[in-house]
Length: 399
Image 1 (cartoon, rainbow, N blue to C red):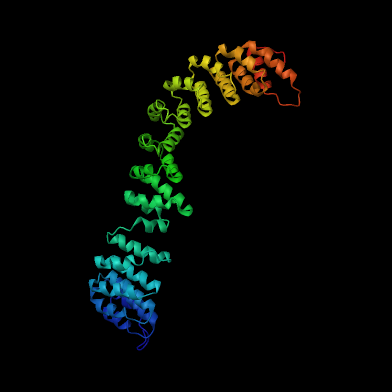
Image 2 (spheres, rainbow, N blue to C red):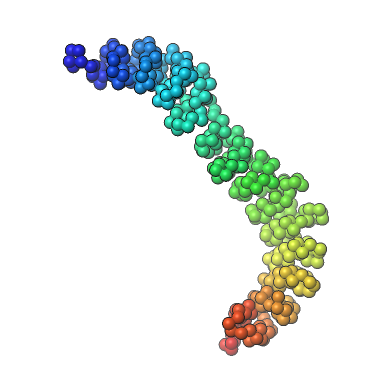
């Protein structure tokens, strides 16, 4: 080293020359001062405390940041108040970040308010430094902050205390996906708050995604007049058999025996509901009658044949078609003659032809042939496929 040249900071640090590094803090070149402050921090020698505290008043940001960082590394407890004051007065991100990380090392509760003030910074590194410091101090950071930062993993870690802010976040389209995924992962603690808001579509969707975990709560919601319609729809979508009994009880009261309840029981294929379905075939609500006809075909109960044949009569064409399809699903030959007659009605031709093909009775062969032959080749004939299938089943090669 030249006699009056700049000090070699690396050599001074390697020699653990504390006095030489402290003298370097007073050099004119700010890069040398910053390097000296950094080196003093790496030495972790508490005797450097006063020199580093003085360096917090340096005119250059790089030096101040290095001194703040070094004070944290040497665990200078006397630096807590100066570092807090630095955060309150400083605007340079580099300095603020260094002060925040130093305060995290020092672990003093007095720093909490100053560090909290740094949360929400537009600068990711500064915001992260404040977050890490507060967490190191054992101070929780509210879910609202993590939601704003799109850090939903932290929300999951917070668990129950994050539920309400996450539910609020569902109203924001940019936040909805992350908030919803976090609520699903939080699970049990989120159920009750979400159930209370079941009539809000986004909350209902989260409950649907929770699957089986939500079923018991949704069953309880059947007793709430406001929530009941939404609970019925979700229980139908989830398809959990635990819901069948409670849903069936709703059919005992005309006020709660809605089309949605019949639909849910139909989708659940709940056998004990067959009696209610048969009765509903001849009720005043066309939507309920339609679901009843569909359900009776799915349940496989032979006692439904007669009521479904009767349902082919009347004025409700949509019900006629659904009853015909259900007779086909049941596959009972007692329905063949009625379906052959239904085949003559243009609006029932497709459903009746399909049902006859499903049953596979040879009595249907000629009526289906007649429909096929009466239909020009270039026009779609719904009876053609059932007719050809029946021919194959019966071993008839004539087309």
